[in-house]
Length: 275
Length: 318
Image 1 (cartoon, rainbow over the protein chains, first blue to last red):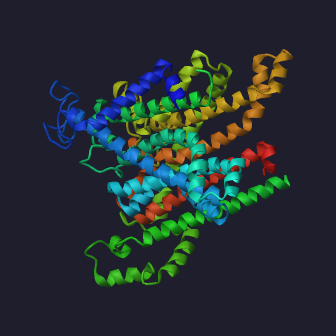
Image 2: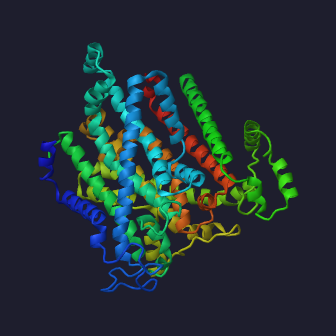
Image 3: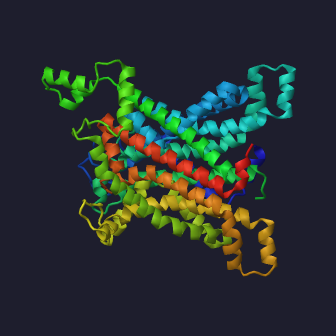
């Protein structure tokens, strides 16, 4: 781990830019109330005011400060995405390890359930479930967690299945180790690298999925500032050639690119290729 | 050949139950909703008699398992029910839009497939050159930015600043072919870019995989021209994975159309689906979900079969 961090220091400049972008967004998310000049839902002027020194990026369709909402959007979007990514990683990799370890009907049952969930594209499945269950934030978190967990299950199961057949695992079985020992001491440490790489990319999928749902009007609901719904709410402005409403979408894009480049770099380094 | 047929049968044997389970889940998801479909169809101030009559007609008084089989039978016979939102027949609603969506998807495929295959092969050939790196960054950007961002950027550039293309894809049933192509160019381009990036990257990877094999080295050492090496030795051997990727990306279009149609206010199935989901118009949501799922499962099945057909090794897996 230290070797990787150390080698990361000698990364190309583009990786450094990515780290800076990521750090900036995390900073904005953590300290939104301190950084933002106005409140998240505070109406401060007329609708669609242009950029000025007072309103850095102008105002939105209801006269709220665009710049402040962009910052609060970072907070909401990143926080919700982060929670979903953590939960779905725990659920998906937990189920994957259990399927690989127990095999038999447990494996069959989990595997077939995942097959069914994966036979519907993620966005379509999300829209379907939202129309059935509603779109309050907790429900949204559960829906997307479930969808992404089915995708992580595959990664975790195949990694864990490779560990289950190793000699050291056989050894643990013969020593009569407990189930939790086998899971936490034998399997998990050995499947961590693919799961960590998946975690970064999963974060990207989740942020794109959530923001698409919000853009379509079925994700995070107003007045909560969110990068996807901000584009939707202010789309009228785009038809006048003003690209301000696209800034939240640009933020999503740059965040996703930054994470991709960092993950690529970490994979390169930890797979031992020369830097 | 016989082995291939057997595998195809087995795969179809998996695909059909999967679709049935999806259908079953959507049925129960809808049946367990609070609220009364008869009320939803007739509106709040419907007369009790007509409500009762409709409940009878929709079999709402029967136990859920009976309703399930009635519904399944109806669905299999193409009777998809009536939309809650505008009381039109769901089949008619879908029929009025499916042509537009297929046109958009086909247009996007035509734009992206030849282009991305050529770029994919070129980046593999000139790997690690400046060209390769630029393509890599550009294609990463196209998959990283949300589709609606790219769509709106095109609207701003081509429709508002340059005024070359219309910003909204307005088409009606009488639009001629050329006017359709013109109207749907921007949405098709938006859809094709995200798709191209995937095809490009995977074409590059599979070509690189073949390029490093001994028989290509041999062909080079024989003194064949680089073009000849690519066309007669590399391409035929990387065709399998490439076809696979192309078909899988056609499946991606199922998702892509939803967002792009909303951006361009294009009268297709994706737009219909989003509107129906927002209005909780379950008969429409359910039918389009099944249609999308069937397309997705079908294309994945085709991709699997083509992968096996072009790589005999997979026939004897396990």
